[in-house]
Length: 224
Image (cartoon, rainbow, N blue to C red; front, side, top):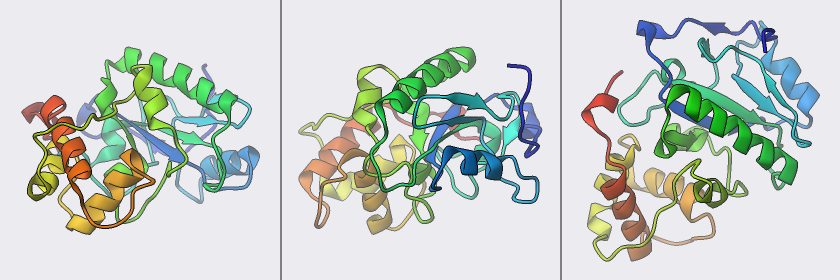
């Protein structure tokens, strides 16, 4: 992998190493169309990886560089997410299931990238996690639990310690940035309970409490 076709990248600010992986969908009709866009200098967007529906994984930007995939947002105290992350785009319109070959290829890319940069599973997030007001990808059809079962992300378990009044605090302890309660709830459910409807409930609270207890944001993560 010595050729990276996208010109849309820069240096990671402050010389930081990537400590996050952000998963996206392209929201475009085809892999080829998404590839063209991510490599178009006039558009100024890119990602490190683009994975097709049939499982072709193409590196577009060297992981050592800062790709332009995340935009405005924050996670675990990090506001320059582009400098701190690897971006993976999945060719998907947002209205269809993710194909098995694509998910299998994603698992390989995640495993190798996490090992290369020593990124733990709880630092693999969705675009909607770090930009909940603007973004909804990779969306409700994405199988986060599948990744968690393979040690490539995390999945919460309900615990008796969760209280609805603590939901916002617990969600922020896990990594979500300060937002209105309804915004946080929508982002949290999009990832962990996409079938849930109605107001905040005890299950939401219990799941957030479990994530906050097991994967709390630490001081080393609180960097701009």
